Each structure stands twice: as structure tokens, then as C-alpha cells.
Amino acid sequence: MTDKTKEIEEAEVLGPEIDMVGVKGDALAEMPQNAPRKPNSVTYTRDEGVAHQVKTLASFGLSKGSIAIACQISMYVLDKYYMEEFLFGVANMQKRIAALAFEAAEGGSVPMIMYLAKTKLGWVESSTVEHVGEVRAVVSNKPLTKEEFVARYLEVSADKKEEDDV
Image (cartoon, rainbow, N blue to C red; front, side, top):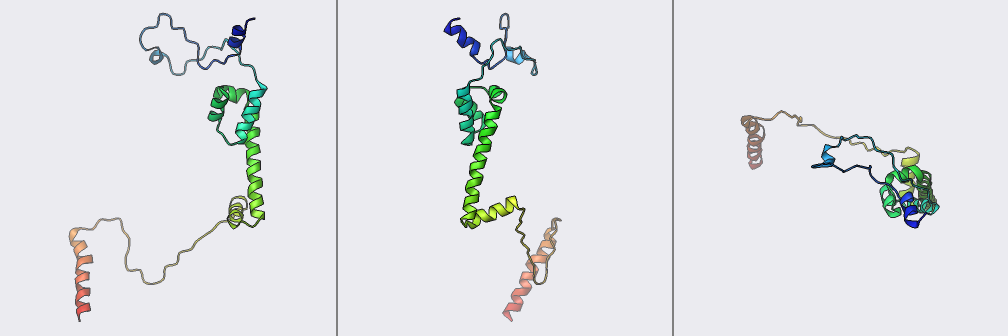
């Protein structure tokens, strides 16, 4: 088996195999949207180097798409062959961040203590607004006519001016 044949066998097929012989016009527009894919004639073999790379990149917080691009594999291959490594890397990142947060809280960081109390212990800050005094207006969504507006706001202002002048 030659090196070229081996590369073709280990290569990953990213799209469906389409026979373009005799196709006229826009072939993609004429294809049904949910057409079943033909089985891939080329299979993918799992690589431990890629598995380690996926685990490392996931532990740095990269998304699946970014990891797939960095490792030069498709999302499908990442999901099928390297999902365990991806999840292990994400869990490792979360473990390191949780340890840092807990160390900061133990060190006396008030914002971190409050954050952990709210997220992990269910604490809630509730604020109460008290209104003191007389309520002189009622809020309504009904629009005022011009006459109502003048009577309510403009004439009252004129009456107050007369009282102030006395």
C-alpha cells in the first residue's frame, strides 16, 4: 500500500459524495434538503495525539468549533471519536476555576464570598422600596385630550404662580 493510498484511507470525508455527471444548472438547489448521506467510503481512525490535543484545548476553555479547527477535524469526528476527552478537559477547567474561587473566598475576598453565597447557597439580596408621603397622581395608559392636559397641568401652574405672587 502506498503512502498516498494510506492518506486517502485515513482522510476524513466532510461532505456527502455527489455524482455530478450529467447534472445541469445549480445542483445544490435541486437537491432535497434532508437527503440521506451516502456512507463514507473513507473511514477515520482515532489518533491519540489528537485526543491529547482535544483534552488540552478543552481545559483552556475553547469551544468545540475552535477545537475542531485547531485539530483539523470536523465537528462530527470530534463528537464521535473525542467526546470523552472534550468533556474531561471541560471538567478539568471547571475544577481549576472552582479551586481558585474557593481559595479567593477563603482568603477573605468579599466579592467572591458573596458570589459563592448567592450561586451555591441560594442567598438573595432583596431591596424594598418604601414610599412615604401623599400620592397625588395616578398613572394611566389612557391618553389625555388637549383640554384635559391644559386643565390638569397648565391651569394648575397658573394658579400656583398667583399664590406665589401674594
